[in-house]
Image (tube, rainbow, N blue to C red):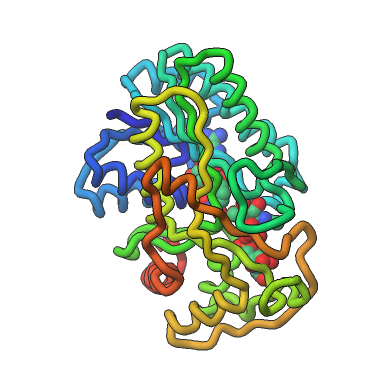
Length: 337
Ligand code: NAD
Ligand code: UD1
């Protein structure tokens, strides 16, 4: 199969490209490098020993995206491309709606035109809002609290409507929990711009000495130690979920929705402890107020993905911390050298 990977130069995209190439898929990557750089793709080529086409194209550029489809015969698209920072989406909502939704509408229109009707979409556990109970199942009520989350929910509805209107479409919505870790080679990993918003990149930059001290956002949640609980999943497991999703839509049409998580929740303090063990030094932290918009506990019920995709995470918390640290210590300034 020949797969177009939008957003393939990014964190999850680059890891998925490695898995796709290793599994024998042909790929092309489309990315505008808004939140990534081509070096990640050079490293994907080094890891796999395989070559592929890269198009530095913005999905908002209809003609350029159309040309990519005209030059290739794709069987399916894995659609990672999008902006993803929650706080930024509250400050500049129009940019988020335009980029994520208009970009996706362009992509879907062009796919239709070229008769490519299979798509795997990067959704997020954020579409569950503040769940009444955990673990979270796919049929839980949906809601969201910020423009980023709203774009994910809107795109889910767009894809569901498209599939209703044309039964030839095969759509898989993958709702990721908290992706962390890096490829075991330490050659690709998460390379956030500026000060990281997410926990593990922040902890690893404290460990490497780039940041002073982790602020733990609240210790008065109704959780085992009062700090927020999340379902951290190794990015290599997450990438594997995309291969399983492709296998599923190869011969199926309709819409399929899966949580990609481990089913295990860890607190912020669990993460600090596990990371300290992996890097061999104490990670300095202090307790501060809760972060607005945060919830106490969020972890997946992964049973549906296991039953229908045969997907199961195989990396544990120590693997996640070890591989994050391996990437961080080999690339203290990310891809910038
Ligand atoms: P990332 O920012 O590393 O990768 C996204 C890529 O999309 C970047 O390389 C960026 O340059 C590209 N891009 C953005 N807008 C584009 C456009 N208009 N045209 C072409 N390329 C464009 O993010 P990631 O962590 O790899 O996330 C991938 C996807 O998974 C995103 O859709 C994100 O919302 C979703 N997701 C991520 C997480 C997470 O914690 N990382 C959690 C849930 C869902
Ligand atoms: C955040 C986003 C979510 C997005 C996900 C993946 C918010 C409110 N939610 O989820 O929409 O899908 O990232 O990109 O931004 N924490 C600290 N100190 C820090 C950073 C985080 O204590 O410096 C805590 C948080 O309070 C939370 C946990 O660590 O309990 C995980 O935080 P984070 O990595 O930002 O992920 P989420 O909040 O789960």
